[in-house]
Length: 278
Ligand code: PMP
Image 1 (spheres, rainbow, N blue to C red):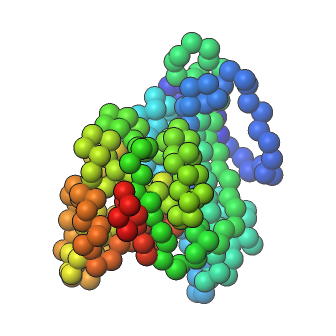
Image 2: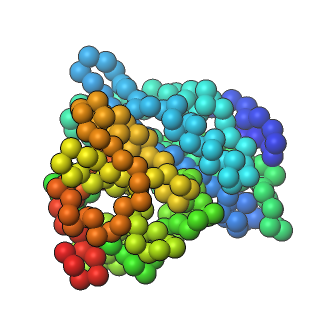
Image 3: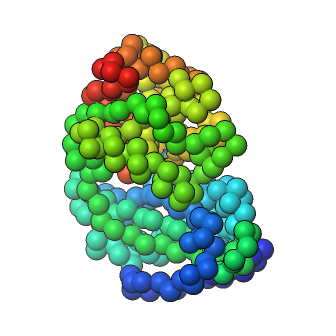
């Protein structure tokens, strides 16, 4: 679907997966005006295909678009486009228990712009791919490196939205952690350099007795949709849930640590390394 700046998205159409034409002066290529979403379709025994809370992704894309000075499809347009794409690819949704269909909605400034300004035209599209486990460990515990050199987001920045540049910013930290055989990076806040933020593409939780803690949503971490579900489930199961700044040292006093996200689902953390401490 396309739309001009300040306009409404008109309905789009299904197309075979393939290259898309883009001007060298497209806003997304020059000024990073791009947002994405990530969600999954699963197959259940008694029903063809189910989506996990797609309206929440549509709402998050709208909030992100506002931050990035972009128009956004309505939540209804977003969900319709996701459903239509999944339905057209439904034979690729693996049987229950053996994977899922990952859905990637993208919104970007496709219009040409030379001076720094919002692009004059936007494109919204959805593509899908069958996927297995996100981590090579499968659902076995992962290892985290707490990075004290790189930060994922700063106050007043774009850490609270799913803009493409946030992910470019973590590539180097992630590559370093992987070269040292860690599964992933855990980031700290950029002001005090001591409070937990999140993992490159997941939120973090600590369990201590019957209390579960997770960092608060203050604009520097992504408001994960899985995070919200886990908070609800934990409360229903009788846990006390605290959303509060968590000093990094608390990791080493926790009974359990786990991370959540559409791609990582709920993954246990088996080891954490922080300035030599393990
Ligand atoms: N934080 C970041 C930086 C992410 O990229 C993701 C994945 N979207 C998450 C947290 C988890 O969000 P969700 O549960 O909505 O997938």
